[in-house]
Length: 99
Image (cartoon, rainbow, N blue to C red; front, top):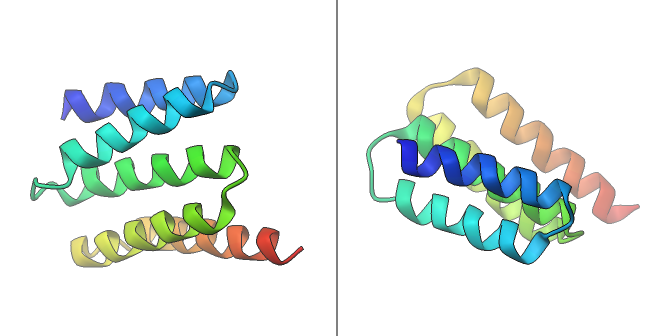
């Protein structure tokens, strides 16, 4: 848990500092660390962070894919709030990509 959480926090800070390559690498480490676990909320959190980092880098289509993965994980968990947040992010990204 702590290994994923520090990576998600660090990647968000790096993205805000425009250190996008490092932010993405660390966010992907968080996803890779969380993925083999059965801790669905942790997996959702890591995927949403990666989506946000990709969005900051202007990679909207890739960010949308990660947000959609997060939505699926949230559905598996049965967490309607997380499903809604992931869906809203995906929809926002799709609308931005079309604009």
